Image (tube, rainbow, N blue to C red; front, side, top):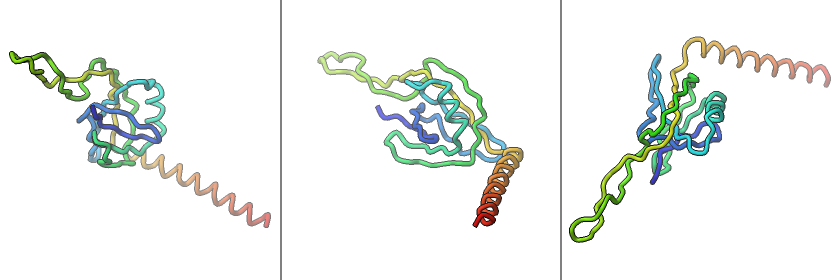
Length: 148
């Protein structure tokens, strides 16, 4: 069964279908349910903390959207037996021996993580880091000019 996914940094995670919109306005928060699978929760947390660009893919693997302006809050909630998709399964046979199918929820363990829009402190920190980087570049250029 096809699964929606998100890509954060270089890592792609299966997510509960329909659990990720992340179309936030200022001051809002949203969650996404990441299927744990073979991933370690600490590794998921580390990757989300270190990477800000999120790309969402449909269950058919088509890129739906990409955002680089959201802040991972660090909120992580473990949920067991969380509904992640609807599957059609054979649940029996009819009087003529033909298979009867029903829609059932597929359940898996997930971590529900939270994102928010950046606040003024996030923007100030980002600008401070950019200024620090620019100063280092200027210092390098000045030193290389003095040596040449």
